[in-house]
Length: 138
Length: 138
DNA sequence: GATAATTGTGGATAACTGTGGGAAAAGTAA
DNA sequence: TTACTTTTCCCACAGTTATCCACAATTATC
Image 1 (cartoon, chains in turn brown, purple, orange, yellow):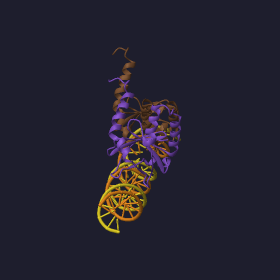
Image 2 (tube, rainbow over the protein chains, first blue to last red):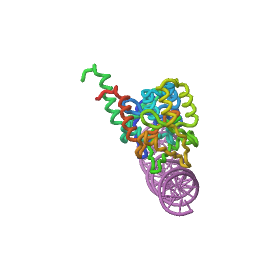
Image 3 (cartoon, each protein chain N blue to C red):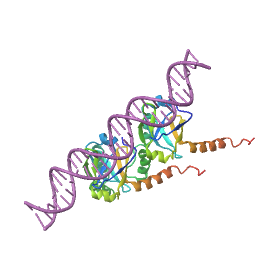
Image 4 (cartoon, rainbow over the protein chains, first blue to last red):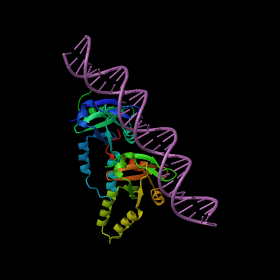
């Protein structure tokens, strides 16, 4: 079970350390793919299998269904953790999520999400305010 | 299992490298044919057999289905990988998919698709936006 | 609080692979 | 045949990626 918010930097070689707390649970390989709100999602091997199961047998002749499969499958990349627990972020995913240098990794129970730090800050501030909007300003 | 998005160039001799990750799984020969949305599809030997099975399941008396089968079958070509993992793209397929120099190869579980890079970018950007459309603008 | 262990970050080196080009072989046309 | 184009096979090189290691800063332990 993954929880919490962690800040890391992507280095010049596009490497990103995953929180050391999570490494045992993540295993040697993970699957990274596109998430909603232009962030990335990291699945464990098992988590990914489950995800694939939901895709199920798609009718290959349907452009609509095929389009969906394209986004999910072509977006996904299996990446190995190096000896120090880092993964490589493929270019196209880095671009998709608009990563600058600093990112936020957050635990979401079964999976992780990776956000560009600035985007996360803005997003979470907004969410915090929404949650507290009934409260008086002080 | 094929996943991810890779960019390659077709050289002057119409050769195209397939992602090195995939070569073991692809084997020495693959089948390349026309796909939906003016892209090309690459099957492994086994994948192609399966595909043939599915085509056989279609009602051959239906002009629609028969047309589909014609395009796929008449479009198909068995091509071998050279020592460096490259295949030759036949002229008529190159024309069909409107390849300029740069193409995108994407993994779709059992098969690969090859797109002209520019076309892919436009397509996938649109799909990405669709996936994120629930998001509020600010 | 001091020492030891862990971990985030950056580099260096070695291996791999994308891409281009050349030579040999095979096909074509005169 | 000869001259010329096209295809096939092989290799070279540059740029990228993988692997290993170092250092500093943080965290844990006693």
